[in-house]
Image 1: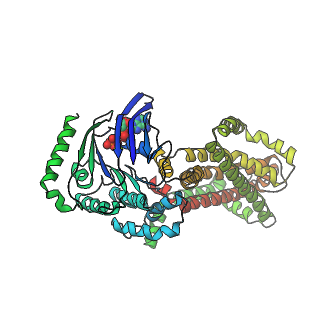
Image 2: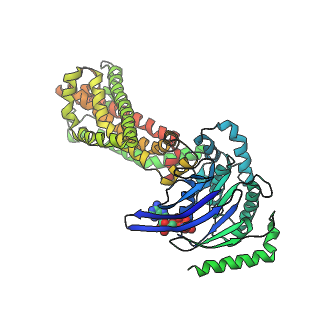
Image 3: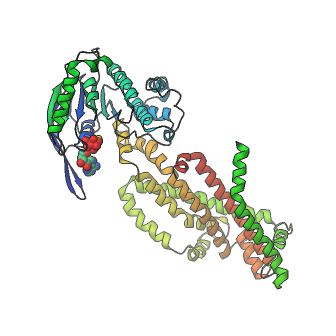
Length: 253
Length: 257
Ligand SMILES: Nc1ncnc2c1ncn2[C@@H]1O[C@H](COP(=O)(O)OP(=O)(O)OP(=O)(O)O)[C@@H](O)[C@H]1O
Ligand SMILES: [Mg+2]
């Protein structure tokens, strides 16, 4: 379980301090899929970094399973907003980087890396250089890298932002499978998105944040039945929730 | 495909080759036309004749000078990378080393050369060191810059996957620095040529620089020119090797620019 206790973040920049987050209090349960939506610049990426232990919060504290986060937490898979592929490595080697950095054997993960690339539709691109792939393809490769070690916690920053609607739908459902929808051994996922339908389709709960400094404006439960499918979008509750979240977002302005 | 490429390369080389050829012809004709003496400006044919003159032990001279150039280049590359790593790794090392290195770099190397001879005696060693001294600085700077100018997010990527600092260094910082280092080595390759020849000018028993000095004393200008051409052949070859190495080991850097 992840507990955010009055977390605040003020960047010290040359042009003066920037308060990105204020007073974020939130509990993310084990096995929960939590979606974060909010206007651009409200601190969503910042919040993911703080949870990951990459940046210390300037106020409040974060605990993961009871221990306070002070440095990068182990066993987390992170999809950054940018693909961040190493340009001197092939796509397959970029995926395998996760194993190398964690000090694990490359060879033992090769088959899984290739399977993941197939899963996201990058079959046959393993030997390519990152620059030979489109932005959306690079994002998918970055997703494979985050999934390689099958981490129990996934922090995902607009992982499908650069994808067409069809591919996005496919990968959303694929993500639910990877998450372990319907099984007891689910991962915990914090998922940042600008797409309200995507948030509703995937999440157990949706957090709506205010503009900077980002605070929790509203918290929506998503009571839609699982497993969710393309048909979930047709459910009346889906539409109602989408509209409600949209209104909540508009109100925060 | 391959034939097409080479034809395109030929077309690209054509203007400079034509200019070069035209200059050579003009040069060849200018001597007799204006009555220029050979000891002032030898004709290209005389230079070629001197280059192939077997009574001059060219292979030995070329070997010595090549040894100095390549040795100086290797020392500059090795020491430069090592110092660059030290500077990037430790702020204390950076504060200690940088002012000192800047000072060393501002010394006129030509003026230091006689001291090296005094300390190390005749031979290739002092000349290797002079060549290294002239060429090492860009390597230090570029190595340090390449190691530190890494996208902050890439470093986060390393940390989020639980990599210790040394592993982030090896897997992310070092490859990031490689194009910087290789572009510094192109400068070093030419600087090492200057260093080796300067060393030989000051004092030496063999080498192409010494040939130039001796030839000038005897007003044997064709031989001086011949040595000059040999030097530039050695220098160009080293430069070419560095460029090829860059293309081979850091192709992503070329594709970007
Ligand atoms: N390293 C930094 N230094 C200074 N200010 C920063 C830094 N990173 C982010 N900020 C500021 O913090 C605020 C939140 O940034 P953040 O990237 O977390 O927003 P976001 O919600 O992810 O936005 P988007 O939806 O556009 O990705 C912004 O106003 C930004 O200018
Ligand atoms: Mg963001």
